[in-house]
Image 1 (cartoon, rainbow, N blue to C red):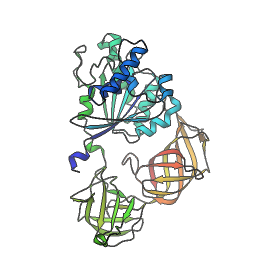
Image 2 (image 1 turned 135 degrees about the vertical axis):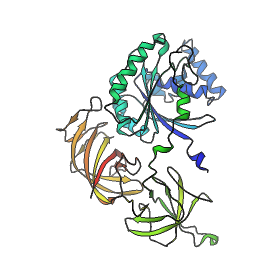
Image 3 (image 1 turned 120 degrees about the vertical axis):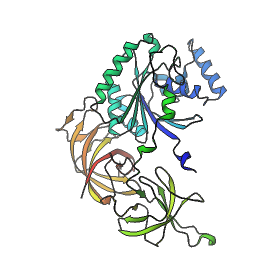
Image 4 (image 1 turned 45 degrees about the vertical axis):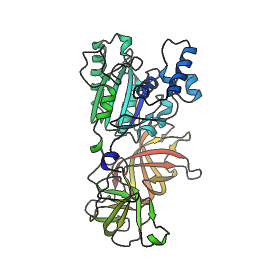
Length: 423
């Protein structure tokens, strides 16, 4: 796999209120990029006709669950895949309802770009703002606001301009490094794949053109070298009896043969002898490549260890200050004991306290809150049993995040984004 091929994938998460046209937009992208089969198109054309529609309901392509189709809403995260000659895409189609906040956090946590839809007739809603806040909390580096259903406001420039100004003003309160606002009609196809003749006043790119060209290669942390070891490779065959490598996904920085490295938590140092990708040796590895690293010295390295640079290493810590999204019915409370998984390292954690609960609609911090209920987000302090090799989430979304699990069942009950680590 060449460097060019590893970087031509864009993960983006979609979010919108009910009836904003999110499923129709995804259907339009799949249709116009020729990512659906003829029999699929015929099936939804027939279904649309059976429902009495005088148009093809592209939302039928994406609302796959029967309960979603019946209610006309998106419930769980669904992943869709399509490609153009320029780039491959993974869409995390996330639900918009407040009771599915945890699903949206899950879908957006690995996204390079967030796509928020608003209905041009209604403008910004409480849900639109909440989606933007969550994407900002998750440090999704690129945000697109798609002002949909422009055909229903006669492609009015002033309507778009009003929403543009309102959202731009709101976004100044958030952490959004790159914001693009595009007027579209998902149903008619205006500005989705091709530029709209009905909106000649709009001088920006179509949505697909923007998705194809948005630059994400530099969004990764290429400064702080982080390689969490997932698996120790020791082939049993006679021809490889002396092979020993450490497999994992590069979480930050660039690894090259000859680099001096430090293994944590042991503190042993060595030099990278070689880096293997499948059965090919490569000259370098960077996020998000999955590779096997060979070291010059025979060290005791195991799953959960971290390979980094001696002069730029994370500080092992057992005290974690994080924003946590709670994902289960029983609330998160102080003194609670949970299992924690951070990169490839697992252990136990104690909830020291809940500092505040964040209202994701108003950004108000409720300092009196002492617990987090289902779908709530708040600032929490944890004490872990084993030291974590962590970075702030703002620096590295991989080494700055973790999940919390119920010790008895192993079910994921929370997701965390580390604010800072203390010695």
